[in-house]
Image 1 (cartoon, rainbow, N blue to C red):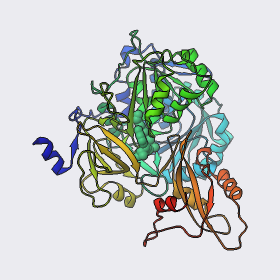
Image 2: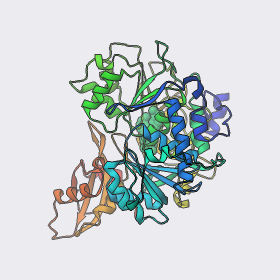
Image 3: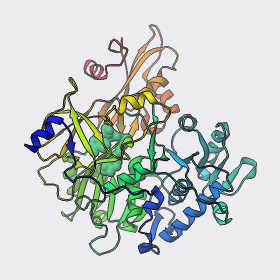
Image 4: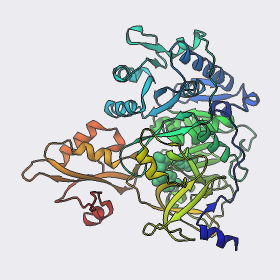
Length: 545
Ligand code: 4UW
């Protein structure tokens, strides 16, 4: 009867019940709550340079950074600071320093082109960029063009008053003092960018409460892996997934620090650096996206020995196939390694589903069960009615981890979060009788290349800048290595002499590497659209395979 009632209202609640009370803490207080227990232990180490910080050092430097940002740099609580950084241990110092100072952090892929960086920083209202020497010129070129811009911080660089640059170490060693502000849990902590279900990337407003809630939700004993390894030490996590994406940020960096793990960072993935890090640090925990697991499963230089220390692996951000999982398992000597899939979105801080520790082996391909305190509905793509078990439809989620909205974009917010608080994910799913969920497809425009977001609208707008092109549509096509890659369909003015290479070259000059038109360009007569002008992407793919 209970099941019946649940299905009639269409609302599924987490089988793990509500989440425990979300404390009124800011994210930095929450992360370092247990620090006294592991204050002398290593917190973060760069696998390439060997630079390393203990928890005690990290916490002290975060606090100094927060004070310097408010006093010496003159930033005010609520202003936005941008991180233009690869994964390095100092990421933690500046990011948590800014958050402890009541500032909002936005992050960006350091391999973005200057155009991509500038667009995001202008939209976010960035007042300071924190970067490394390699990217200092980009930062000091873009920064002063932003309204109200204060200064740039260079990690591993010196003060340069002529360019208004502070070296991080001089800032941290000067002993600047400031009173740290009270931070309301609803204050904006993080501003990552996501294209959501449609259109250009938008600023996703995540509060301290959103981020803390998602960490608390993961604390359930049915979900959490072992905090300590079999040998009784803390986990060592190798993290190449970017901290400038919500998975790397709240799903890896913050959670690992909260648990006292030792984070090993790699600034940029290369097979050599990654394998060397496996050999040198013998991590116990890996976080992957399916394309990284494919590398581990199939690269000839990856041996069983490289993976011998691994006890747990978490995968997410793109579909993990059973075939890949089996292929990878063959590379493991230890059959007890726990491999779990989770599901998340930038808009949900990020996790809403994860496989519990004791997921039955029969649940092949599942993303797991609802996180504590999270609700879901699956609705028909045709009628909007709630679906029952084994019926596919769009996934809607609701919970304390759902974003506050898109920055300065009420329209997109209202299209994504309905009046009852349901976030429309744009993912097509079904659930089974035990309320395990399975991703089937996507009914949003988003393309995912190796787990990275690519907005078709962004590429379409760029293609339309090319002289002689009158219409364009971009869709994702399957790719063995990347999962999907973008392909453009274009309509050229009759008589124009434009070829595929011209378009590909133009796009490559404007966007970062993974957004390139690796799926090719096809010239067609007309882009199919519905009466209101919306591109019919599925039709496009079916008509022009
Ligand atoms: N299977 C299939 C999946 C899956 C998936 C996501 O870039 P975003 O906004 O965000 C992410 C976040 C992923 C994530 C974070 C933390 C975590 O623990 C975890 O699991 C281990 C995953 O990717 O893209 C959101 C979109 O990415 C797709 C889906 O389309 C979703 O709407 N996606 N996870 N397991 N597809």
